[in-house]
Length: 68
Picture (tube, one colour):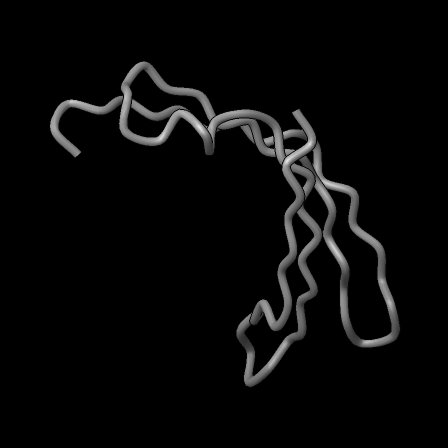
């Protein structure tokens, strides 16, 4: 990415149990000092769904929305 600098800051996690699965919501702030991907910088709301499978946590769904 030729000297591009990206930073990622995650907000607090909100974890909700739904039976044997968990839904996790949080915010992610993407920052940077370059020119290649400025349209993707900003704040995102993320919701992911997780399931314990064979002793490992697996994300089976993830959605995000650009909020700022």
